[in-house]
Length: 370
Image (cartoon, rainbow, N blue to C red):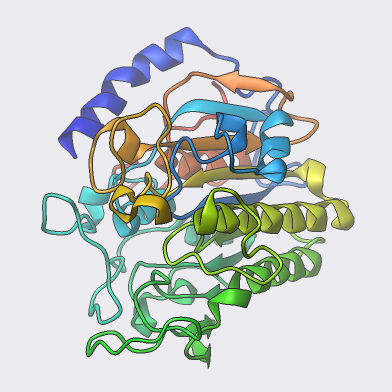
């Protein structure tokens, strides 16, 4: 982890000095008002820097994410806070390096909260959902949580008004498509808030249901200020997809999963358009960590970068990064500033007119003035 911290810290001042226009035309943040935007975070799982067609992948097709990038800013040096799932997500939610929340795990490759974990994100941490709620925002989450499976650690006990998704990775329990018996891994549960509504989960229809729930949330909250955290289970193995996308990509199951996730992005963005709030919604897209290379063709690609998930090399922590806000961020931008996933926290709070917590260190930096 030291290698990542030093890289990000050493480049921070250089990034600020080199370019001050990545968010060209961004609105000046005011106190929470009608000018404060909605926020949408689209978060992939185990997606490598080279796994988008807009980043040069020769066989994967991601037209909706490509359009999102062309309509806003595509970052070429966007870094995750850690090289595996749980610590990375903790950092994004809190704006703090995961070592501060104690979520990095004990091994040199890091650790994650499993299906039998007794702990989770500490209760004394402040998530962006908790902070934005104080500013009058509705807060929703869809998808993979992975910060504690016990009720006390679930999203609805971390600032989110509602939740629909899996409490951990889609390979941490048998599903309707993949059956196996492991004593510490019960069948994969699908939750609505804190209630199990399906077990084992049908992974073949999960992404479609994620998109439907997210779209419904947008429609229900279109007259309010809201933040929606959409954490896809794709493109983490086992990458089961619906019949519509099965065997449609020359990149195999991984390409099918990337295409299905991209389609879900299109469905969600259309929901913003249909609700008439696209121009008042700031959208982020990135991934929790790099590709799981030991999965070979079942995993992704870091493109020109070395290594992947579980390592602190560039391929493990350098991610696709897209920011889109029509009418506010000029389209067609390619930015080389060094930014990190935990910068999302202070950026949203600044634009929402919500003060940062003053009782702790916030490692992220507001990106809006860059």
